[in-house]
Length: 337
Ligand SMILES: [Zn+2]
Image (tube, rainbow, N blue to C red; front, side):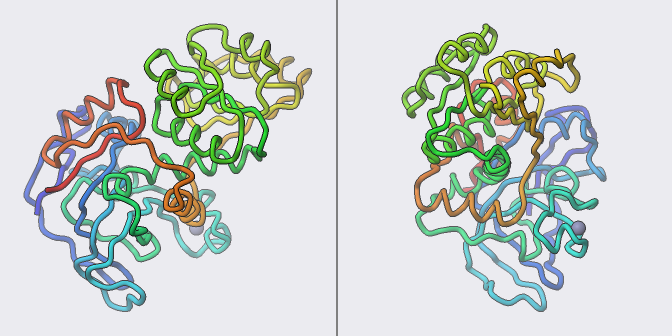
């Protein structure tokens, strides 16, 4: 079978399509012949060595969906032919956090394509806990691409304690996690505002029910305050926008941070935090129950996952370059013939 492997951490061009042995499922594992797979910015960061892959050569990719074609010993509840979606979260399965399904706090928590060999391959072996049944009404393109961003966005919104009727500002709405958060916030009955540097992405959000959109590079904090402020601000951008995001929040508002695409460090004006009694909430990834909830919301239609474009399996470098260009709204993926 063929797999895209990183030979080194020299960037996107370090991925090459190679002939590799088919993996054999061990006890409690199934093998999935993938139909589609999703791309994430993580795949580019890993290709650049930040974070470094655990071994080289390394198969990247966190998202995928396909059909079980081999079953290991001791597996019950799954059979050859079952259609499944890969839930990319791995953990020790034994510690107190894992036993309570708070796997994101497990010392051994990791995801496929970063700490664990990933989905840019024709066939992948996963433990059954990582195999989620694909609902019949969910198409393969969506099934293979929605996972990582959706579980991340859902956890983030759950941690924000968003209520129906509240006002949400999604900063940088074009990114995969932000676009998913936008959908969930709409689905929960919130009034949703967005920012983007791209007029096309703001136009997309308005067509999907956003109340208004602002330029991410402008003083959107002031603009949002003039409209009453936001109960919840979702900022996945970091240093370039977080000051405006804090200004955009109402007194007592919650600002949720799930990433920092513009860099890891910044200065904060702390009195804004206490005079306005804001909460800064960090979030990352999600647990298996949140993956199941994200899948349920997808299947019942209240949180359709925005999909930008699918490439052929043999076009991974071009697809990653397109993702890196930032032109997309929603997910980019690969489709096996
Ligand atoms: Zn654990």
